[in-house]
Length: 232
Image (cartoon, rainbow, N blue to C red):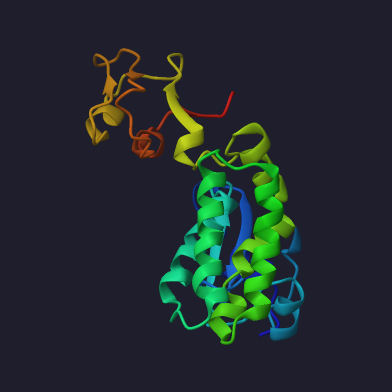
């Protein structure tokens, strides 16, 4: 208690794997808020976490790097909290279901700017009108990511892009032929056989078959597999 995020994540935890940039930390369990890396010197205690839109909660921490989409993350936690709802309060039962629908539309590139305003308004309503602790804290992942990572929401809605390259409907995969060594590892690991190419020759991805599972991106040792977001 009282240690900073930096001390816990970088010093004790050793930082994020593979040299990835530290992006955010979510504290307190599924109903906790997401704290940006710019607040890395924030001390961990009840008052400070509450002040920035998160909470101590269960005491758990989830560290995120540059490959995390904050909209997708909010969707994940809302989906979890909706499943945990007892259903007594209509604000929690119906409100979280609607929050999930809006977040799914944003991740799929189907949302409009008016949906972003509705998302924030509805999240505040669920927080205020619910009776128990679950309902009152369930919108925290949405409200905190909108507060600190609104640019990612805007990118999904206005540009139909996922900056982190996570949301499947907004991304595609390609192979840089200049970097590809033809090691065949990506082709061997692809679960849908969407990658073709001869040994020691540049490979290619069939976009019609690719299910965007990211396996090729994760196993490539040469940085040859690229994620294309939106119109990039």
